[in-house]
Image: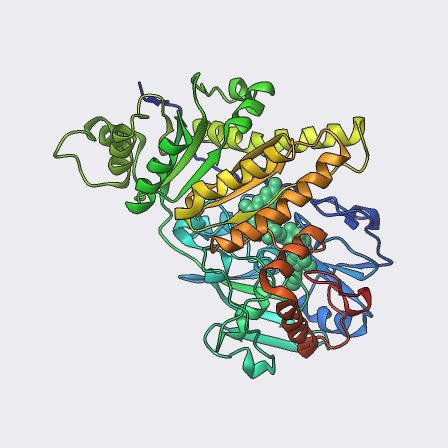
Length: 514
Ligand SMILES: Cc1cc2nc3c(=O)[nH]c(=O)nc-3n(C[C@H](O)[C@H](O)[C@H](O)COP(=O)(O)OP(=O)(O)OC[C@H]3O[C@@H](n4cnc5c(N)ncnc54)[C@H](O)[C@@H]3O)c2cc1C
């Protein structure tokens, strides 16, 4: 029977945001990717945005960082002056449908402030400790991209300090990239919901789109103005164990078609084994029935004011002909039609504890994988590192992409787990390395996957950006070719001829060779 728990409270992943009290330079030499070799002579953390033009003008090279939650090494200094935005924490204005904040405001703080005004910022990525400037610089995306798109679509205005110290105020729709004297690259970006693969390019593109996703290489973002929505919807979650991948994909296709959900997350069989091995299923009080081959976590946005009891009534009546046409009823009908309703566990609006358990279960997958990588690094070979991809394909190609991942990993004798944002066709294949040779084989597999994903019309760099990661930089080169990288370099040269800002991020600096 469908398990509808009765405990109340509000789901939130804000707990993931960590308070950062850092002072010594050493604390800033690595980001969440643990990219090796970070070093910097100096760190500056201005309290006022007016200090930034002078700091940029006087620096020889400069790397701006936010929360350093980058998974690409893009926020790891390699000898530059480090400019931390962590003290730029003012929220300057909360308007009816806009919010203006300095670049160092953590998303969790932004969301809490907006909530007090009855509004919210929808395209929130999983890590809510990331800063406003950081999520713009990487064009972050997340589970809810399916409904709300990536951060790009929510940026209304930016203030940016360019490499020469000049200040650029950009408002969407007011200036094209050409107005800035920038040569527009001619490569064609993949037509998928998430693209975090170097510079945005489109004929007559808006200047603001050039800065979004530029990973600190074109300018320092000092303030951002985001569009916001109100009222705040209530949310419900459904954990759906599925007996077979084909059955799950058919369900996801129907859920997508009916636009009944905000997001659908996916955990493959190996991910579920990891949850069991680590006892996460017991800790989160979630039953994964025997014979489950993958599980989905479906997130619904329900009208504000939907209560647990009214949601329960909708579920009870969902099979009757006169049930109201609500998202919840549509989801329940599809779960019934696909034969997975009875094993589904739900967290209804207001049931924070249950929602937190379901979210914690999903987050236990990357945590479990990262722990295994760390243990192998300690016990087997210090060179072992996280070996993972972040690729997206049009949903119609999702089954083919999964088959490619499985074949590619199996052919190399690798252990792996795959999870992610299935509603966007964006999942994260991760190697579980037992040796350094597994890491090398995993990188080889990822490069092969990138070529296949591009062939399927997808993007091998969906959410996290390119950063300094050599495999990601190789994926970018494979995607756009040498000519495409040269076009990006021409953009960089137009705005930063001295290669001052974030040299080596996205593509190698000129003195580093091709
Ligand atoms: C547990 C976890 C979960 C994650 N989940 C997601 C997810 O769901 N989706 C997603 O997209 N990412 C995710 N990430 C990656 C990361 O959170 C995002 O890339 C985020 O946007 C980085 O923000 P930040 O403030 O930490 O920036 P940093 O990591 O500090 O910097 C990232 C890049 O942006 C540049 N930058 C930072 N601030 C500025 C600025 N003010 N002006 C110009 N450039 C700047 C830096 O130079 C660097 O190149 C996750 C990371 C972790 C650790």
